Image (cartoon, rainbow, N blue to C red):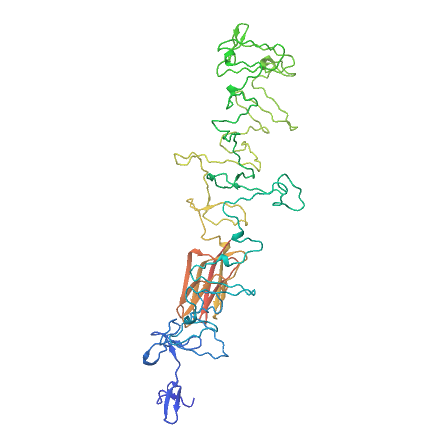
Length: 579
């Protein structure tokens, strides 16, 4: 601008923007407003307005959004054609919703303001005094009238209410104690048109009762109470004789015999015995012998021992039963020719082709069993001696613990489980198991690689120490080198389908002349996992993570974002595949 001035007019310096007062010849500096605490600043803009403290005369602070009405309250006049949007502390107030909540707008009325009453409202001077009656004329069928009691009681005079059609006034009602007699002949008090008269009434009336099986309410003498019914709507009854005395009690039980001669209550002793039965007086005393005549092939006789022993005497001799001893009292049984009985093998005749001991083979004689046709298994008894098995001319070594050409091989069914254990017990008194020792192949040279999924020997050093590879086999380790020259998110480890790329190593170097901030994320546009501040001109980091940094989600890139854009940031990322 033409009004600007140079701060150092002698040697030349910065130019400062001014506005010159042409009349007075003075320059007024043009400035930009900023605010903030010491050593910080924020330029004033639409999004960062300048904080102000509004005050009236005499330095009195003006109340703004305080909810308090006072001398300092600010008044605002809104044009009738303007729309006002109100926001308090970031919360829009609820206006004209009828609901009171955190957003409901509170209005503070200034002490010097007057609110006019709505049309028709009465001041206290025009309101009715307490106790004054108000007559509401609603006969024209207008809307219902809502009467508020104001926390008091509203009394309604029933005498002033119109009676329903057919209702009787007190003059026409029956006096207390008055009874009504129904027409016992052809009266119509309970008549229903179209029904036939039934004894005293033309129509029956349903009678109900109270279902009460737990806490029975006792009615007092001379009062009316509900009858009790069961859950199936049957009446509870109380049996009484013609004189009105309760019966079916412990002292007066209900008789169950038709003649009235059986002692009550009924017991087994009071019942008449069946024909031929004997009372205890006619029964045999203990120790008396009873002869049972069952020669006519009658039904079986069941003899109860009454907790004692029953002895059987045959021809004067008491039989020995279930003793296991054969004596004069042992019962002999004659077996019918058509019965089956257990007998001893010694008493049986030999089957056809069986040999007696004289015809049996001598010890050491060889027997050939022909079972080639798939007959049942042959059970061979060794008679307490050893059996020698010859397979193809070779006697197999059995139970020797030595593996050789004669060791018998066994093929296991695919659905069988084989219990395998070692030969030496573990060094623990309470443990009788024999763990299987595992071995590896000692190597001083690299073995030949096998195909993926093949079985392979475990590898140890020549002292038996197991050789392991950190993190994963080298075939699953990946490295990727990237150069970044722009301040945009750049992939440093490319995603692998259905695979986690866990980060195990990271090397970063800054070749730019300015300091650089490097942000590392485990997915594109994802959250930062690592952040490094690299010094200018060769600043960098080299990290080998002892515990891999796990990637959050499979099939994602590792990325880096550099701020600000630098000439060259060199990054090498080392990852390992995981599932």
